[in-house]
Amino acid sequence: MESAHAHRKDEHLAIAESQYRQRLANDAFQAMRLVHHGLPELAITDVSLKTHVLDTEWQHPFYIEAMTGGSNKTTAINQQLAEIAQATNLAMAVGSESIVLKDPTSQKSFTIVRKSNPHGFIMANLGASHSVENAQRVVDLINANALEIHINSAQEIVMPEGDRDFHWLKNIEAIVNHLSVPVIVKEVGFGISKKTIQQLQNIGVKHINVGGRGGTNFATIEDRRNHAIDYAFLADWGQTTLESLIETQIANSQKIEVLATGGINSPLDILKAQVMGAKAVGIAGHFLHTLLTEKQAGLHQEILNWQYQLQQLFALVGAKDQHALTTVDYILSPTLLNYYQQRQTQNFK
Ligand SMILES: Cc1cc2nc3c(=O)[nH]c(=O)nc-3n(C[C@H](O)[C@H](O)[C@H](O)COP(=O)(O)O)c2cc1C
Image (cartoon, rainbow, N blue to C red; front, top):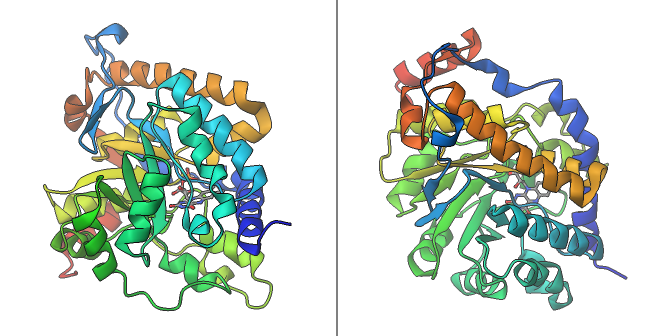
């Protein structure tokens, strides 16, 4: 019999997958278009997708984002994802490992990832309320190359068993100062603000994942699990991934490296996020959906396709590498432009 915590992991998986189709109808990345120029003067073979991120060089600027672990079902999924990550040379994050701190029998669902991909770039994952010791434990468990600390106040509020105290900065500071690997502070789908970026920068955080709205929505997922009280009004809470990337531009924190997640459904979305400043882009829901519907071979092929298609898109916009993306022309929708202008001119935090 698996624990309630393990059961929650399975529920997340099932509800995220059932949400997947709805989200496509509401594609937040349509708020940005890239301008087409007919003479790129570049060959696809001239393009390098390499990115320098988390003190390492990655061959591809996208990765499999944190999803799962903790139950028997998710052990199988983690193994499949890790094998694909190895075969396609993608980085990968595991889902929150807080469950192993309470239930050591769940360890295998995470260690399988390192076992299946001994030399790959793997990120551990934990919530922001944990101690340095626990953070180091979950890193060591999978010999992780980096740790994602997720910040998810809007999700916790909707969870009946969620945290009710959000004093996290001191913990994050201690972890950032003492951990053996780089630390990414990651939102789980509600986006980031200039104020949050500055708070994180002040305590020495060097890597953030803006984790914007527009993809998997944990306010809605937890609302589906919470039958006692209705939180449907939080479905639109937070900044989209593009709005969050605008926040990083306005914050202009040169010392902080920006990653992005949330609603990435295509190589074009990856490119748009990169043009807006993301050094690497994580994908969760879409890859999960592909794995569940088209099996391991289907996801493997999809990632190979995306790697090639992204290279094609770089050529299409005349960018031979990531540095050249700063010169790509784009147009924002009136709504997104309005967001930009208000956030730029307001005397806001
Ligand atoms: C089933 C599922 C479980 C997730 N669990 C975690 C988690 O444990 N820790 C975390 O930081 N993010 C978790 N996420 C959030 C993703 O890492 C990602 O930030 C979010 O889903 C937005 O990306 P997407 O729109 O590509 O799904 C989970 C996502 C899914 C779909």
